[in-house]
Length: 203
Length: 203
Image (cartoon, each protein chain N blue to C red):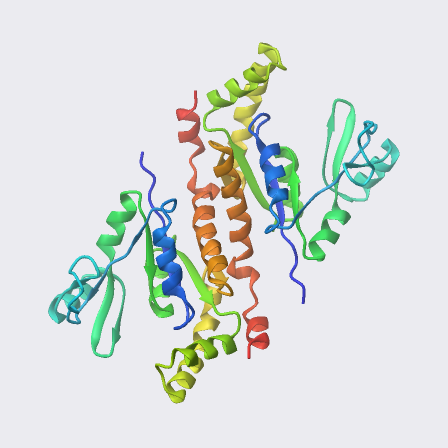
């Protein structure tokens, strides 16, 4: 019998470095993760491929997926819809593949309510002040935008208690090792182990 | 405020390689584990030091420790008593040190009942047949002793479901990495994290 894969959900405030962590995780051959592919109603950019970066669908299809409960979570961002297709994720899990999902706090809690055995990991900056400095040094947002973001960050962080794990991204290499360790450890949890199968397969 | 340390308990059948794993864990500076020191009524060997290998005490002292509830677990082996001193372990945990305890299944379950937040890790051989081969190749036990051991092993393994984690020692390096990952992951569990303290310390 093939073991079912695990669903790992990673969230954290904008600028915390979760994208870098996810890229690092996907590069680790020992983990053999697959990245969840979202459906979206926004138009593909020139370098994007359907079924690779996103599944590009229209508004009607998206609404039908919501109505049929085919999305693990969804959200509207600047007039476009984004969602995680339940069937795709479940097929990967059934095939024994561990799935990585990088989504915001609201989405993560939606996923947990639908798949309670999913494992939620929250990435935190060493301090909020540190995050402020990081956002400033990017030079892409005005002070007002940054200040609004930081207000939102506190609300987000307060929801981190509903997660399974909290990882502080003080040094990227260390944070990556912590998240990878969580993935390895979760595979060793006794409740996922069948002693019966083990003894049957044991000479 | 200093964070309390975690108590890790490692068990597994004789010959599974748990001693090697524990030695490897203690050598990892990134984990900064301390090994629990047992009390025993047996006489010290010439190379053993009181307070380093064991705390050597007499029968009367040992019985008094049992009566006063000063042992997290204890057992009699070939007429000698061995036990884990509760105060020593708690002092180390309070100081923020993670403590490693290598004991048998019965002892581990005693510890869990007294310190429910302790983390129990069971080391399994790839198959029981593999363990048999390992015990045979040691050339230290008769076939009868090995056969008795293996009967006992099945009973032990059935208790592994009461542990938090099960690690298969297929390759020593991999098993060591899995146990170290469990230790790193446990430190990241959200329930051990104080968002309040974090926000207070955050600029």
